[in-house]
Image (tube, rainbow, N blue to C red; front, side):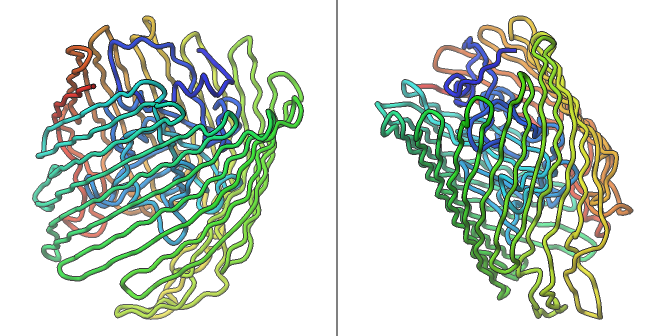
Amino acid sequence: MIRTQKTLMGLTGLLLAGHCPAQEVEELEPLTVLARKFHSAGDDNASSVGLVTGEELARRQRYRLLDALELIPGSQALSTAGLTGNTGTAIIRGLPSNYQQVVIDGVKVADATNGIGNFLANAQLGGIGSLEVLRGPQSVLYGSGAGGGVVGYESAVGNGETETRLFGEGGSFGSYRTSLSSQGKEGDLAYGVEIGRQFTANDTYANLPLHDYEQNYANLALEWQAREDLRFKFSYRGTDNLLKTSSLSQWGTSNSEIQTETNLFALNGYLEINPDWESRLTLGYYNENYRGDFDGSLFGIDYERFTVNWNHELQLGDQVTLVTGLEGAHSDYANTSGRGVDYSNYGAYANAYYRPLDGLQLEAGARWDEHDDFGDDAAWNVGAVYRIEQSGTRVHTRMSEAYRNPTLLDSQQFLSIFSTQLANPNLESEEIMGYEMGVTQEVGDHEVGLTYFSQDLSEAIVTSFPALASTLRVNSPGESRVSGFELSAEGHFLNEKLKFRLALTRQDREEVIDLPDAMVAFDLSYQADRWLVGGGVSFVDGAAYLAAGNPQTDSRTTTRLYGEFEVNDSVSLHARVENLFDEEYQLFPNTFGEGTQVEAPGRAFYLGATIQF
């Protein structure tokens, strides 16, 4: 495989150009941003990082974040609350969504007060460079809520002449998707812009006769090279979403109408102070507006988060690299039940990379955070990477500790009609201790990796019931462990015309929630001069997605096919089939009574076209 340490070369793999079957380009290993907050080769980091470029996502016709995460081992994403448009869940290394962080253009989306469910439900992958998943505890770089891992991507801009694309697609369940996008560069200003709309009535069934979802979205990225050593990048990603549902259960008919808006703004400044010192200042703002009408009962949430991050990468001689930074954030949360909190937190971190010998790198880092309401927290990590260039073998190991802050919504007293949450001023942060060890082997144009991971969750925040109609949020004694193996493989044959990708996860212990014991996703595609054809197979074991002992979903195997044909230089056609063999399975079991299960969509066909100007 072709490898490079040069950021300029690696960035060619980060530009989302859309798929063009006739295009022949030399593929360079794309660079990760999440692993250090600055561009680096994934192999140069002890953390496990999975990456899928924007071009790969377009090639495989993966447009939503929830649909794409299965391509990365250790990751599962789905909506256990319903079909497309309902609250999303991301599970990384056995830990559910509240232990994951999402970082877009350097801006963290979530905190303990407001989770990532609504963002996951509506996140689109248009106009990005690469989708990345940084697995294992990552609080040193990303603070609270990164105990399972970090999902992120950066908005892409053009690097040459303007390319404009009109995309349209229609298919089963009354679905359609359309977008208009453009990327290019004029002088010192590079840009990427996209607007789009989608609708689906989903594959409804007897107990879910209505599940209509529509979305309008917009993405914008502007990058200005002010001087040779200074550039600025502004980005915006926003969605406006409407979900209408009607469901039947043993308790009767329930109707809902949910409107959700998300807006993320990021301003990044990059300054090369000298050849050995690069600085990145990020100003970010994320807001989420949720309004739900549940059979006339109204509930709403307003959430906003301001962030400031000042990060530095310093080369201290030939052997040491130091990544360090200061961070601050302010969050404001309010819901229509009369609950509201606002708080600030700030912190500092440093992570050092030391290369004492050729092929060997040692890592060590620490972080300190101060929270308005819950005091200070600390995190640390140590790791090592050893690479044998002659054989293409890479061995890595890492140990790390992360944390997750509680929130005043957990610790304060709250009175409601049905029960009272009692105050607990002694509530402490949850702790996650992680360990991993793995080996990666290059074999010609292919790469295979195997990693063992183990994570212990302690001081878990749970709900107790000390008295009738009363609840209390407490730290649970003892530890809960999750462990397993991750296998990844990717490569190509026939002069890069035939490509494959495999992601396999095997869970040995599941003491937090019951999850699939095994998950496998395999994709294979062949590209000729003017056409492309591919397919994928996914296997997921049954799981309760709650505590062990609850009803489980059935194991399932699903298959998809996709293809594209270039009519001429301006027009291409594409098609795909999801769930080719019409496998019947559940996304969530009937845990809460007969009829409460969530049935997965059946076979679906889609056909579309792209016009390039």
